[in-house]
Structures are given as C-alpha cells and as structure tokens.
Length: 104
Image 1 (spheres, rainbow, N blue to C red):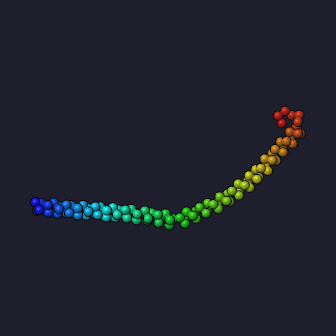
Image 2: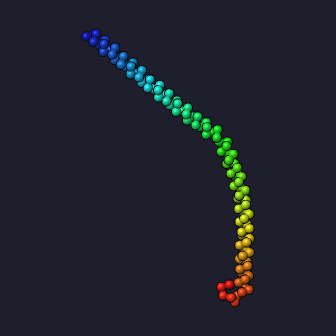
Image 3: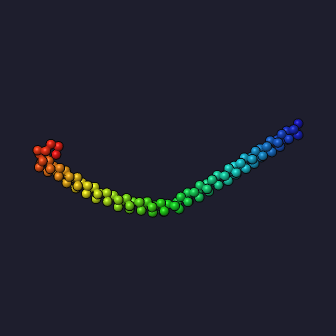
C-alpha cells in the first residue's frame, strides 16, 4: 500500500513538473513571438518616424504654395468685383440713356 501511494505521489509530482515545464515552454515561445512582433512594429514605427521630415518639408512647400495661391485668388476676386461693379454701372447708365427702348 505504501508503495502504491509512493508511486502515485511520484507520478503526481512528475506530472506537475511536466505540466509546469510545458507551460513554461509555451510561455517562452509566446514571449519570443511577441518580442518578434514588437520588434517588427518598432522597426515599422522607426521607418515612419524617419520619413516624417520629408513629409513635413512637402507640407511646408504645399503651405507656401497655398498662401501664394490664396493671395492670387484674393487679387483676382478684387479685380472681378471691380469689373462687376463697372458692368452694373454701365448697365444702369445705358438703362437711363435708353429709357425709351424696351428691354434695355
């Protein structure tokens, strides 16, 4: 009976140790996979961060072009407003001069 209990005890201890070893190996493999994924993600982030100055330079160039274009549009809009006012004044003057012509 003692021998049976000893065998069961040793089997339980061996099974527990085997279970712990297998879980430890599984955890180690998961840690290595996670570390590899983290390394790959860190490398991707590094590449993106390294490319930021070029993006910022292109953005600054675009902002300069946008400011220049906005200035040209404002000047064109001012010229258009002057021309529209001139056309309205001309129509009003023609309307007063040709009051007797229908539709004028």
